[in-house]
Length: 127
Image (tube, rainbow, N blue to C red; front, side, top):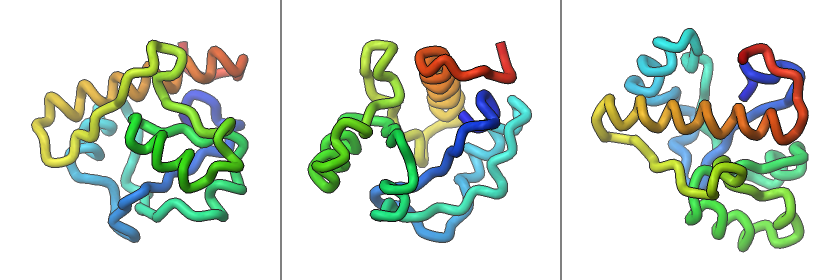
């Protein structure tokens, strides 16, 4: 998302993050094929500071969606699924699966991010 809309403040946090770990090696390799560098990524846990520091909280799947809306009921309207505009289906977690799964998930994430940029009328750097 940051690459698509550089003016947008984008960050990442997890519900069960391996805090202070870097991005998964396979994810880094898959992203690198699209000239995206995930090596600076450091995992962190979702927190009040993360929630309150952003206008929109985008999650990958129904489990995260439900957990976040339960944990932060006052922010329910800001918690949405990445694929909201594309049928609302889940983005599966590719962790410990084949590189083909990582590649498929990467493509879905790219599609979801592009659609959010379009829906928010954000000027993007890619077509």
